[in-house]
Image (tube, rainbow, N blue to C red):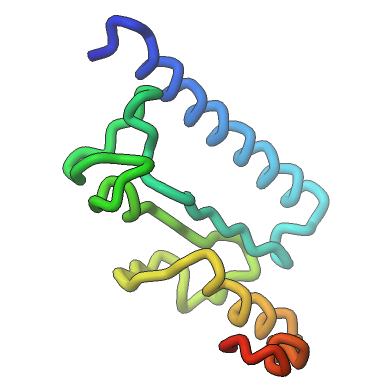
Length: 123
């Protein structure tokens, strides 16, 4: 139901975000920085149904443990993305903290945290 305008507002916000990301990409290209850039996009939860989001065909949304609340899109783009990975689709599971080791490795940094190890925290 879009009679109250929430769906239009939510769609407008998503559209504006897309436009602004496009502007960032253009600026990176203009400044010859795009080839050294890795853009990562990942949602934290499903869309908020009370704000006009639609997670169909998934059940429910934000604040829910059903797929509509925990299954979200993510993608990586940018010139730094290896050519052989461009356009590929992965169906595995990931959480926000999973990026740390990958990004540290890409930066040439050892992700090992001695203080966390001393405290008995898992790697």
